[in-house]
Amino acid sequence: MLEADIAIVGAGAAGLSLAHRLSCPAPGSRRLSVVLVNAPPGPLRPPSRTWCFWEPDCGLYDAAVTASWQQLRVRTPSGQAIVGGIAPLRYKMIRSDDFEGLIARDLAESGDVQRIEASVEAVEGIAGGAHVHARTADGRPLTVRASWVFDSRPLGSLPAARTTLLQHFHGCFVRSDRPIFDVGTVELMDFRTPQPPRGLSFGYVLPTCRREALVEYTEFSSAVLSQPAYQSALRHYTEVVLGLTGLEVVSAETGVIPMTDAPFARQTAPTVFRIGTAGGATRPSTGYTFTAVQRQTQAVAGALLAGRHPLPPPAHSARSRAMDAVMLRALASGRVEGAAFFARLFSQVPMERLLRFLDGRTRLHEDLLVGMRTPLLPMLRSAAELLYLPRRPFPEP
Image (tube, rainbow, N blue to C red):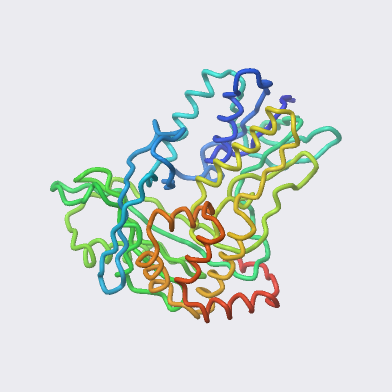
């Protein structure tokens, strides 16, 4: 049996971020022993992925950032371009492999974090701590005893909700033999794609240099597509909408992010907590997660290093979650047309303010100003409907 002060289950963005913060305590802080349990290579380990977020110019993980931008562009369904700067913020892209490499180097230098590969079968709260029951790649049972356990594994099923949509996407890193990409601007939401009956779809272009970019097709809807359908939609966006041909595909990624007003349990036993997406870090209205994970893990690490109770704080404020619930209901019910809804917001609200709003960092009067730019009657009807709408489990495929 391994023993440690802290056990972290899962080495995605949340698990790695918490381990990293615990490995770099401020001078005078207590030092804690940490075991980080990551699934062996295989179906339980998430594939490589790309995370995007925005923050002021300098950040903790800038050494792993692939590219960053200070200008965003949104295109309406008719093709009108809405371009805006976001200073003092920067929109950043970080690839999970680069993030893991940066964290791994820091953890190796610290010596406070022991990394093991094992498939976790159960987390059991016990008197004075918890047991993590796992099995190594060669089949040997392994138990980790810790005072506190933080579980970042994806949930097996979503909690019951009044509204759940899925943000699902397929993207490719592409390379051209010609300088065709505008490296200074992110194509954040390009609504010149065919729109689903309820929800929305858009294209997304992150240029890393004049000849390379990440190009994605994204939908907010109630069901995912088949792989051929994703490939067809992305090809249509790339070749027909953008007019780009002859691109070399370097790598591809496909993903699904739940957008739900379900409440997520942040504590499952007296000494066992959930962090990351499993702990409610994903913003329901956008699917962005990385910045909330940083807030959440910073608070948890600070509490642990100070000897306080480490219950993760809510990743998003009650006001933000309430506004998101109304927006999700309006989209899912078809009361608002998704592409027009977001295009209107970006055309009438300064982009820097809108990004702060989407990150839950605006004040009440700014939230009200943003709310006034939405279709008021459909939003009010959706808000009223939420008062009596029951929470139901999301149907599994």
